[in-house]
Length: 113
Length: 111
Image: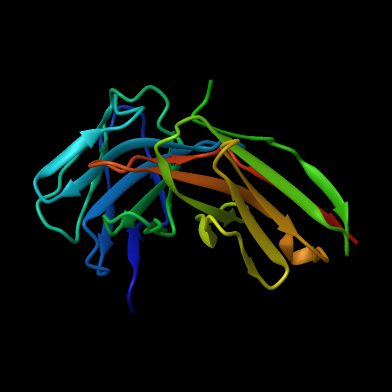
């Protein structure tokens, strides 16, 4: 199957714990993105990466960290420094040329108790 | 001013109605435009790209007005299954090609 895999679909963690969300793609896309979506709100960009071993902060990077060691993988760590981590997290990919759209994974719904 | 603005709605329309959404963007360097659909608690999915000449896909028509910096989506003969949130997306030209989403317009089609 071609596409973007995010796991797990639902994740529960205790307050104060770091948690890592997985995003894997086999579309051979250069760029990968992490978004956060709160209920009834739009998408907010956390981090993005255009090539392996390089990534940039988005609009709400505080309390999050990422790595891009392989083209296929872009894991997101939600650290204990993130004040309100409960949200729907979406990973997206895109082939970096002018007119290409983004593709999204199914998302991970994180609940911090 | 927000980079991409949409009326959040909700738009409540009867089945069979025609409904139009607009989305304005502020950066004239924007070069690629898309409409996405997002169902409740799901990921956004591409509905259609928006081309300069306008394009149609069945009951859906997308248009771009570069002079006034807006894109539009027209849905004809609305179906119950069209109920969703519609997001406009703008991609800038240049090395980074920044992707910006509107906050979405919620559509509810009523029987």
